[in-house]
Image 1 (tube, rainbow, N blue to C red):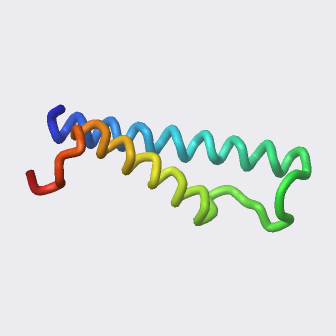
Image 2: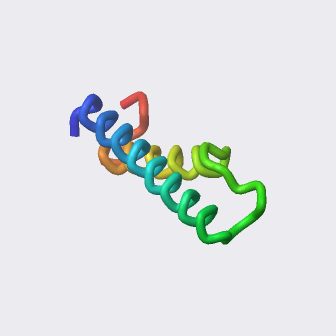
Length: 68
Protein backbone atom coordinates (compact mmCIF):
# COMPACT_ATOMS: atom_id res chain seq x y z
CA UNK A 1 0.00 0.00 0.00
CA UNK A 2 1.18 3.53 -0.72
CA UNK A 3 2.88 5.24 2.26
CA UNK A 4 0.47 8.16 2.12
CA UNK A 5 -2.56 5.87 2.21
CA UNK A 6 -0.98 3.89 5.06
CA UNK A 7 -0.53 7.11 7.02
CA UNK A 8 -4.15 8.10 6.36
CA UNK A 9 -5.35 4.70 7.60
CA UNK A 10 -3.21 5.07 10.72
CA UNK A 11 -4.49 8.59 11.41
CA UNK A 12 -8.10 7.52 10.97
CA UNK A 13 -7.55 4.54 13.26
CA UNK A 14 -5.92 6.76 15.88
CA UNK A 15 -8.80 9.23 15.80
CA UNK A 16 -11.43 6.51 15.99
CA UNK A 17 -9.56 4.76 18.80
CA UNK A 18 -9.29 8.01 20.76
CA UNK A 19 -12.99 8.74 20.25
CA UNK A 20 -14.02 5.22 21.32
CA UNK A 21 -11.78 5.36 24.40
CA UNK A 22 -13.25 8.78 25.30
CA UNK A 23 -16.77 7.42 24.94
CA UNK A 24 -15.93 4.50 27.21
CA UNK A 25 -14.44 6.88 29.79
CA UNK A 26 -17.57 9.06 29.67
CA UNK A 27 -19.76 6.01 30.22
CA UNK A 28 -17.57 4.83 33.08
CA UNK A 29 -17.77 8.25 34.76
CA UNK A 30 -21.53 8.44 34.25
CA UNK A 31 -22.15 5.02 35.81
CA UNK A 32 -19.57 5.38 38.58
CA UNK A 33 -17.19 2.68 37.33
CA UNK A 34 -13.42 2.87 37.57
CA UNK A 35 -11.11 5.12 39.55
CA UNK A 36 -12.29 8.39 41.10
CA UNK A 37 -9.71 10.38 39.09
CA UNK A 38 -10.77 8.90 35.76
CA UNK A 39 -11.02 11.62 33.16
CA UNK A 40 -11.07 12.19 29.42
CA UNK A 41 -7.80 12.85 27.63
CA UNK A 42 -5.71 10.84 30.06
CA UNK A 43 -2.31 9.47 29.15
CA UNK A 44 -3.69 5.93 29.06
CA UNK A 45 -6.35 6.95 26.54
CA UNK A 46 -3.82 8.64 24.26
CA UNK A 47 -1.31 5.78 24.58
CA UNK A 48 -3.96 3.18 23.72
CA UNK A 49 -5.09 5.12 20.65
CA UNK A 50 -1.45 5.64 19.60
CA UNK A 51 -0.70 1.92 19.91
CA UNK A 52 -3.74 1.03 17.80
CA UNK A 53 -2.80 3.66 15.21
CA UNK A 54 0.78 2.36 15.04
CA UNK A 55 -0.46 -1.20 14.58
CA UNK A 56 -2.76 -0.05 11.76
CA UNK A 57 0.13 1.81 10.11
CA UNK A 58 2.35 -1.28 10.23
CA UNK A 59 -0.47 -3.43 8.88
CA UNK A 60 -1.18 -0.98 6.04
CA UNK A 61 2.51 -0.85 5.07
CA UNK A 62 2.57 -4.63 4.85
CA UNK A 63 5.19 -5.12 7.55
CA UNK A 64 7.92 -3.26 5.66
CA UNK A 65 10.50 -1.33 7.70
CA UNK A 66 10.04 2.44 7.79
CA UNK A 67 13.08 3.15 5.54
CA UNK A 68 12.19 0.67 2.81
